[in-house]
Length: 464
Image (tube, rainbow, N blue to C red; front, side, top):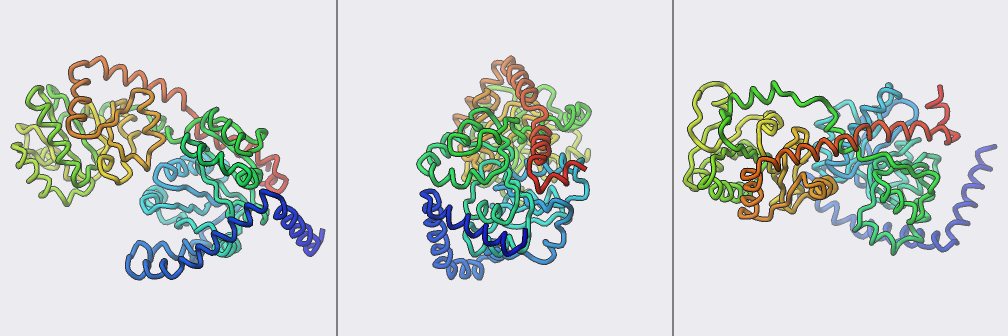
């Protein structure tokens, strides 16, 4: 078929769809998103001048991508993976590791929505992978970046439904995949009102590899093709499968903490205003029990400030670096202030209970699975936006608990001090969860590779 004829048929199909009801809704979205983009452009430019974050991200948001990033995309098919934030970036990393076994020469483009997600992606993947901020979903930016990247396979991690992105990529012949897909209660409530419009977009997806049965049912109810929807578990729990718990590492840390006779609380990646809450909770517990607090701030340059807060509460403390290096051989104080990089994960292993910081203040939380890896009960505040689905599952399973203030925190920790069997119950629940989710990343990837056989254009890439 000649190129002009193909273009004619494509245009005819486009105009036929536009006159349908769902097509009319798409056209309205197209006009509104473009109008909003153009009217907001001066504001975006001003922000880029005033704030370095916006300056760094605006280029990508407007659909521009550097020649250096383009040159790093390698292999067949040309793959573009999109992850919203930190949790989805972790999934993308697990997916990429699994894909390398089947597409070893492939280097995909990774786009991320949030600055925290960008930072995490660069930590995990380094400089060899092209990593960009995700473009705004309007016809101007999407036309430009899709023509530059020329993706043949686009993988969206979790619930990512970008109408123009999906529509325009599909019009250019790309396969559209949703991996580790989920539809939360809140999202489903909103999406149901947009069902005629969403059906128009979802029918362009070639595969839905969903987390659970409820997610599959919901994506189908919203307009996804049931024959293309599968259930493969939650790849975010891949961290629980990495390796057996390193008991020698735990024993080494315990020997430095000298915490054999103390119930040990590790508060990780804490932020300003959280330390005061943690210290107040610790004071309640210290008056009643033999407890040790290991306080690990996110930014260790705050150690002088935090040290003063500890003293203001009537306590003294050791610096972890001095215990670790053997400068101080005896631990006489009830608090250890962590002032080193790279030790928090192992400190979790030597704890009895873990608190995840950045969650009592609105900063999105920290990954609770780093504590769950060591089979520890985990506490966090209300602000777990970056890990909301994981936090919800942990709470539902009785592995994690939400705390709102210092009294709440002290009460939750006291339950584990008074009833040691509760720790064992949490251990068993984590093991049960790990077995349920075992192999989920591999199942998602195999589902992708298996079903690529049904995409005529992609057959050659997986059936060599």
